[in-house]
Each structure stands twice: as C-alpha cells, then as structure tokens.
Image 1: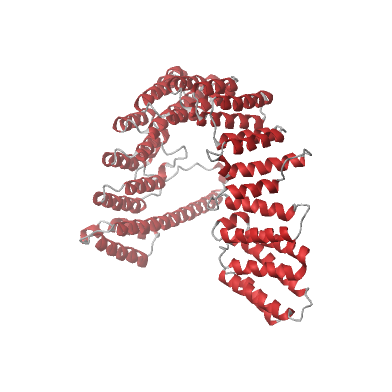
Image 2: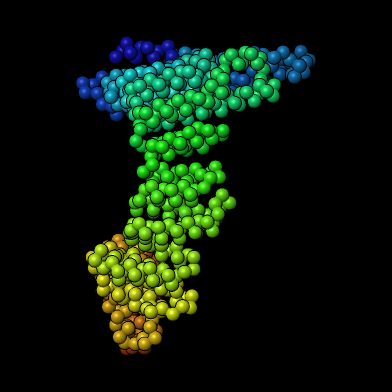
Amino acid sequence: MDIALDAFVPALQDLLTKGIFTQSEIRAIVNRRRQYEYLLRRREARKADFLTYIEDEMKLEKLRSFRNRKLIAQRRYDERQAEREAQKKEGKKGRHGDKKTKVSHSSIGDASIVQHIHLIFTRAIRKWRGDVSLHLQHAAFAKKAKSWKKLGRIYAEALQVHPHNITLWVEAASFEYFGSGTDIDASASPADGGQAASSAAIGSIANARVLLQRGLRVNPTAKDLWLQYFSLEFHYIQKLRGRREILQLGLNKKGLAETAADEDDVESSVQIPVIIYKNAIKKVPDDVQFRLKFVQICRMYPETDEVEALIMSTVESDFADDHDAWIERAEYAVDVGGDAFGILEEATDSVQSEEMYLAAIHFAKEAVAVNSEALDTQKGVSFLDRLFEKASEASISSTEILLEHSRFLISTGDATSAVSLLRAAIHDDRDNGLCKDSQIWLELAQAVQVTSDAGYTTQQEPREVLEHAMKHIPIHDDRYVDIAVSLFRSLLFQPPKSSGAKIQKKIADLFERILVLSSDETGHKFCIPELCFACLQNSSMIGGIRTARKTYERIISKSSALQVYDEDVGAWKTFFDACITIERLDNDPNQKKNLRRLLETAVHFFSKCKQMPIAQEYKRMIKY
C-alpha cells in the first residue's frame, strides 16, 4: 500500500510546486486515495468501488485542468507585460519585437491523474474481463482525455476478450479510419505526446479494413458489421473524389505524383462496395430487409446508382415471392422514372396473397395522396380500381381489404357504392362472421352519413345502422364501446324526428351502459367527462332542472368506478361547474341542501383524484 502511494509523490510534488494544489489539498488527495486503495484491496472486490474511485479522479483531473489553464493564462499575461516594459525601456515598439517560440508548460504532474485513471480501469478490467461496459467506459475516457495511443490498445485488448461484440469492432474501425478528428492539439495529451495525437488525426483506411475483415471472419453473419463496412468504403470513395477535385483545381500543396502515390484509385475503389455486398448476401442469403438496408446506405452517398441497380437486380431475382421486395422495387422505379404501377401489377399476378394486395393498395394510395410529378395521379386511381376488382376475382378478401375499398370509393366521391359494398359484405357473409365485425359497421355508418350529407336518399340513417350493429356485435368485443359512443353522439346531436320520452330513455340507458363499460382505461379514449357534459346539457334542454339533476346524480353515482386521467381533470371540472350552475338556477326550497350535497361530492371526487387545489376551491364554496 505505501509503495503504491509513494509512486504519487513526484507528481503531487510537481503540482504543489506549480501552485495548482495547496499543501492541505495535496494531503486530502493522499488520504482519499489511501481510503480507496484499501477498498480496492479487500477480499471481495466490488466494481462500484472502482467506478467511484474513477469518478472522483475524473473530477480531480477536471479541477487540475481548469487551474492549469488559469495559471498558464496568467503566466502569459505576465510575460507580455514584462515584454512591454522591456520594450519601453529600450524605446522599441512592441509589434516590431522578435517573435518568441512557444514554450510548453507541461510537466510530470499534468499527465499523472490521467495515467492513474487508466491504471484503475486496467485493474478493474483484470478482475471483470467479461464486462464489456468497462472496456467501453475506458475507451470513452481515453477519447475524452485524448489518449490516442492508449485508445488503440484498449480496443485491441477488448476485442481479444469480446470478439463477438459488434459494437467494439465498429468503434475500433471508426477510430482507425476517422481518428480523433482534425482539431488535434499536440500538447493537450502530455501522457501520449504530440506524435500519437497526430497519427490518430490522419486515420488509416487499411487498418480499418483489416479490423472489419477480422470481425467478419469471427462474425460472418453479423449484419451490422457488413453494413458498416459497406458504408465505410463509400465514405472513403467520397474522400478520394474530394481530393481529386482539389488536385484538379491545383489547391493541393503536395505534388500530383506524390499525392497519387499515397491514394487508392477511385475507379478501383468503387468496386470494393460491390464485392462487400456480394460476400454479405452469401453469408446472409434469405433476408430481404438486410439487402434493402444496403439500398438505404447507397442513397446516403452520391453517384451510387449503379450499385443500387445491382442490389435491386439481386432482390428481383432472389425474392420473387416477398411483398416487401416488390414494394421496394416499385419505390425504386419511382426514383428512376420507371413504371411503378406496372411492377405492382406484375407483383399481384405473381404473389396471390392478402399481404401483397394490401401492400400494393397502400403504396398506390400514398402515391395518389402525395400527387407527385413522378407518378400520374389518374393512373394511380385507375390502378386502384382495377386492383380491387382483381382481388375480388381472385377471391382474396379480408376486412382490411374491404375497408380500404370502401374508403377508396368514398374518396373518389362514390359513397353510394361504398354503402352497397359494405352492406353486401355484411349480408352475404354472415357465416364467416363479417356481420360481427365492428369496424365494418362503423365504416358503414360513416359511409351512410357521407351519402346523406351529399343529398342522396338512403335506406337507413347512420343511427339505425349503429342500432343494428349493437344487436350483432357481442358486448365483450373491444369495439362495442366505439359503436355505443357513436350511437350516443348520433342520438344526442342528430336525434330522430320523432324525438320524445322514448328516445330520451334510450339515450339515458345507452349512456349508463357506456359509463359501466368505460370503467377502465377505455374511458379516456372517448373523454367520458365531455360526454357527461353533453348528456347533462341535453337533459337540461329537454326536461329542465329536475331532469338534469337526475342525470348528473346518475353520472356521479357511476363516476366512482371511472379511472380519471390528468388530461380529463379540466373536463370533469367543467361538468361539475355546469351541475352547480343548474342547481343555483333552481328556486326549490331545498336548493341550498342540494347545492351543498353537490359541492361535497365534488370535493370528495377531486380529493380522490389527488387534485387538491380544485377540491379546496369547492370546499371554500361550501363555507361561503
């Protein structure tokens, strides 16, 4: 222990001499390190002790760096002041004075803390070699401290222990190629020296390739590694093209022959991504999404049309039965000015499946909606019309295809045909259960409403469609509440001509059913308090204050079972405020009693919802 602490003495003495730390601070640093060393040498070492030790040392290094910069700035200021004084005495102007070479102020103490942190990481990794997070944290610190030479060794050691970790291979290759960037300060890393930082800034495509190739030999089916290798080569090609343009403009300080000798040929380098892709699909032959990711990478770089065309040709030949591949080919046709709808026509001929038809429908709908110059909108509408007819002839049907067909007809202004289509599906397919599909009933009610709004005569009103739906849809169906809410809104805002006590009872019964069925999170979906407020208004207009009172009392009695969300609180307050306003308009002798009972209910309700400010507001009304 004492031997280990003795190794800190020269560095700490240097920091004390330079004035970065005081004597008491040095003593505190030694005591703290002694305590940590005892913890690290316990019988059963704990990773948390190492990490806490590292974190404290990082904070110490941050403080040292700040104070060191401050001292250097002060020293430079003093030197400039002394220089000006000397020039005044000699009678010379400062700007004509001799230039002084830059003097480095680094010393043994500047690198000591960083080196000590690296040592702690090394000790921790020896104990927990299988923990990849320690290697990654060490690498992250080395980048932050600009310990470039050390960083290369960190990645090498980590890959020996974790050869199947793709992240490590990618990070190591990125460091070899991209280095540390272009803003390297050679004096910023006294532990490594300027030479290490300079070499890291240059980067090496050869070293990066070797690393990725080693990684792929160990992990031949690692998709991310193949994709990163593919992207790296395109990045390097762009770098070569940029340098060639600089040479042609005559902006490069190096000679043409000298630079060309250092660089790969652009034309030969373009073939490398193709080779990588061909090798990748040999190792991962049956994944179309994997190949499409290569297309996405191509689109990130210019002048990759030939490579992209090659990839799409392999997709076409190897995945003739995959609907994702056909859609990607259609999108590619749009980009290059080809016949996307012709490809989709061929796709639905080759792949007779619901998934293929739905994928083609969605693609065509989006193309028509975007109304781009690359696609003829009218041609897209004709294609969709033919596609639905083709699906019917091929006996390919499903609820989703039926709904898409109905929405297409409505969008083209043929809501009457949409109504006929949906009604025929419900009546002609009772055995297959379409009459119990809530989505079809809701779509039919919407189509009937659109037809009615357009001035066409309909056999049924939307309200009647929804009433029939509630007879066919089982109450345990998830969409049963959707239909009940739609019917409730229809009765409330568009009541039948023969509106009376019978309709009001139907509204009340339906609303009570909605309250019961919406006692869980589904109530938030429909904003139950807003429905309560609408029902209260309707009762007040139809039957006056007493009917409204019965309505809100029935609602309040059910509200204890409702789940109240933060977004609903304001709507519930609006509902209670409306109830209070109605009670204040009543001239009944029991007005105060009814109002007090209502306010107490509001206080209890909002207290239960943990909305204490609102509860206190209603409590003050009771006292008033």
